[in-house]
Length: 427
Ligand code: GAL
Image (cartoon, rainbow, N blue to C red; front, side):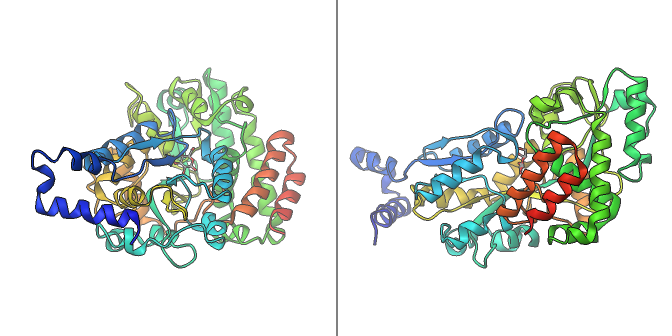
């Protein structure tokens, strides 16, 4: 029995017998406060990208475990563009944080292959009725190589088209009339002709937003089979569709804000809020940002349609929290991961984040009309294709290669060169 087991059973015993509350146990109380090691959790949810949501989760955790000291150690940068390098290094050096924000599924395979994650079926997944309450997709993603190693917290949708209602009305565009991605070009022309706003807000400082936009266009214009074939590396077999969808994104580019190359996705979204842009393609974390914005309400100030041509699909992305080996705080981390998997945590976090819960028993009233309609769409969706840009569809090495191809695209807008980079990404 290790030191932690020892202190732990003493704690449970004191709790069970009630002796911890007896006056005069000052010394023991001091000991109890040190039962748990500090919990260090790394994530990239700062500012408009979910800071309020993760704070709400930690507030709930604090209520349940007042003795556990929490060190949130965020590294900002959308889609983990900076955090992921930090984590790779720390895990390689056997100096991991207690847990961190990680896409589940294929993204975790290098870690499971190197035996850097622990099996938490017993310690975590057998609690809070998790194995019964979780949807199948997130549950499968939590065991990328067989055993449970992580706990999904949310489900995000990628194939959204958000818009500023007054801009789009002034432009005379009806977003629900757009039936495929290429229709959006004409709609954005109208926005720029009839208003002072740009057609579409975007950030091209980092490649991920344009990669997910392109993947959504591929799905909407060329269908699910083509998208799936691409994620399986059948790039040359789908040359025409891939080049055509790249060309459509290149056409969109004419309508991006001029400073796209130097801003973040939250800054791009601010242009939608301010009425400087009409449309915005993003995951529904964009809706989490609107929710934190006083006076900018759904559906009068902002609204959303499913990205044209993708109406039957819920292109998804998830975040999860894994349990690394050599954990600096095994007891505290176990408590934290059980909490992440609970109704309470998912009810606090998801409405603020703009995501829906992976558990099926979270009450929906806190979610508001937009997320409730996303839940309906999820239920009615024909399929939930996994996101490429957010690590669910391809392994991390392929994703790095695809990100290189996308970096070429957003600097040269050269369709043929980008296509060749995509072919190589899978080789
Ligand atoms: C995704 C992540 C979301 C959101 C987004 C923008 O990868 O799953 O929770 O934070 O990046 O950073």
